[in-house]
Each structure stands twice: as C-alpha cells, then as structure tokens.
Length: 502
Image (cartoon, rainbow, N blue to C red; front, side):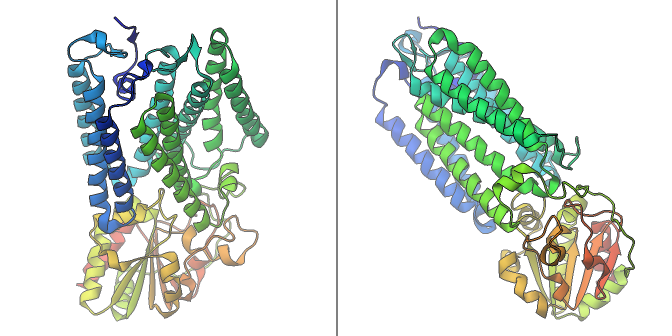
C-alpha cells in the first residue's frame, strides 16, 4: 500500500491522477478540465456587465462543478486502494460530507450577509484561497512522491521553484486579506498605519523571500526544511506589512489586487501539481484581477506602486477625520429637495459608500421612479472607486433593480453635469471633490472626479458636517452657493423626500 497523504481533503482534489507514475493524463479528464475552463472564461465575460452577471455566475458554478466532479471521479479510491498513488485518510463519503457542510456554510453566509459587508466578505474569502495554497504547497513538500514531484530521491528543481512561489504568494494573500478584512469591517483603523522605514523593511523582506526561494530550489533534500519554514514565515509577514499602510480610499484597489494574488497562487500550485484546471482558473483570476487593479489605479490617477507605498490621506488623518475649518454652508430639508427635484428636467444621482451603509438604494430607486413619472430625466453616475470594492455601487443599484441603461460610468456622463438641473450626491465624498482638479497639495490631486460643481443645483446627503472622506480632506462642494446640505441618515432623508414628492 502506498504512503498515506496526511492532508485536508482539498489537497487530494488538487492532485493529478497517477502523477508519480508518469502515466499520460486520461484524455477525457483533460477534455473535462478544458470544458470547465471554457465555462470560467464565459463566467468572466458575463460578469463584465450587470445585465449578464447572473448568467456569468451560473457559468462559473457549472465550470466548478465539472472540475470538482472530474477530480472526485479520477482521484477518490472506491475499491482497490493499491491502484492509487495518492490515498486520502478520508474516503468519498467524508469528502462529500465536507462539501455539503461547506455548501451549507456558504449558502447561510450569502443569505445573511448585508451588501455593506460584501467587501470584507470578499477579503475573507481571498484569505481562504491563500491559506489553501499554502497548505497544498506544504502537503506537496511533505509528500513529494504522492504528488509525482520526485526526481530520483529529491524534489525536482522546477517543482521547488513553483512550490516556493505558490506558498509565498498564498501566504501573502492570506495575511494581506486578513488585514484588509479587519480594516473593512472596522476591527482596526482604516487609516494608513505608517511604520518607520517601512519601504526598506518591505523591500528587504521581499528580497529575502526571493533569495530563500532560490536557495530552496538549489538545496539538497536534507537542507530544505529551514528554508521553506523561513520562506513561509516571511511571506506571511510581508502580507501584513504591505496592507497595513494602505488607507480606506485605496481599498477597492486592494480588494482587486488580493483577488489577483489568489489567482496566481492557485496557478503556481497548478503547475506544481500538474493540474490543468487549477492553472487555467488561477491564470484567469490572476490576470483579470491585475487588469482590474490597473483600471482602479487609472481611475484614481495613481500608480500601483503608489497604492502599495501608502494610502490616500496618509499625512492628512485619513479615514473620517475632522474638517479643519468651519465654513458657512446652506442646510435644507426634505421638502426643499422634493420641491426642486420635481421642478427639474434632468437629475444625476451620484451614490457612494454612505448610501451602502444606510441601505438607501431601494428608497433611492423609489424616488427616481416618482421623478420619472413626473417627467424628470434621471441618471446614475458611478465612479470606478465608489464604495469599498470594485463595482460596489453597481451591485447595490442592481439589487434595487435600477435599469442598467440608466447607470453610467464617469467618462460617459461627466460632460452632462453642465446641463443637469440637479446633482444629487448620496453618501459620496472624495469622488466629487473639486480639490482633485484644482489643489496640487491635495492627496487626491489628479484623481478624475465628477464635475458636480457645474450643475445648477447640488443636494449633498451626509450624516454631519464633521466628517470627511477616506482621503481625509475637506470638500469645497459643501460650501458652494448652489449646494444645499441634507444632514441626516441617507435612507431616512430619501424616504422623507419620497413622502414629500407624493
């Protein structure tokens, strides 16, 4: 009987059939993995638009089902255990029970989680992917024969490189995602935490990880244990160090970046294990996450390196600090807003994270419906980094069944503010701050923002005048002549406007 693989069931599911025997992969298995890869590609295509996102999700589920069933059929021993190079301490029954438990947990979380908590949920899931990559890498290291990694009596050099990279990227993804989860969920400050000489420490740690990976690849089998332990520990450490100095305003980039990391970790493990499905899936997730990170950075007019170096407002008390000076402003009521809204011909709504916190999207949709019945043209303007994860506002508006054709990106609608009668800002701040265009000393200077200052009338809903946005800077829009501040909980204010419109 072959040596037992003492690892979690998911490690078995990631193992190629008869890897250590050198046998050719069953063509039906290769075809099944290819079909699952096609479904994953179709899933990404569907998720590129709110109109097709549900279909994209279904394609992804089908692709994963094909991959998991194929792996179970080809890897789980059902009769003669001696025919299998990899033998799990758990049988098919135990694995199916684990899958069922995971499904129950996933369904429960999906039904109970609030949309405002979706960013931290995504970060938490990314951490699990990273941890899985680390565990799979260690399982392969401890049981190289079972994974077909032996060249003679030791692990092959190429396999060591792939294993080291997979463990390192997975560990960075795990610890970085834990910090992102803590920041997004409010368990730690969303402000940048700037350590002394952090750049030197980070670069030194990354250089050490690269050197350790090279030494691990070249070392003899008796010398590898201290190297892989040190590699794993430093990778966990650098994940914490990279995300701690990033502020709340950069969290959309962080979420997509960690998504990319999780993909590359899976792809690296796929190469180590010779698993086509993991390589395809990991490459798709890694590349799409990297592209999305680039889009997010371009939307903020920032480089990826500047995001990693530290968050917006690092020197300005980011994360909801107090406005530095008291300036006169106009405060209005729901009745004032309702009167001017129904007199308007064109209204552009700019939602932000404050709308998400208040869960005001349904009331907002009701307000827009009433205005449209009165002959008012209503459009929604979505900034790429509004909210705390990519597409956050799009998801919330889709939940409220806002028509897709009424939702526009910044570059498609920014020129229309000059013709708008009302710019209705609900819970957004930094993405409408004109300091990004005029104040070179501002931490958000250069970030593309909505030209709400060109609208004839501006309504700005926020809880109070005390707080500022994630970037930690005051907003001149509050004090413009055409701005009326509506200071209240976003949902309550919109509901009062709806009552006044009836």
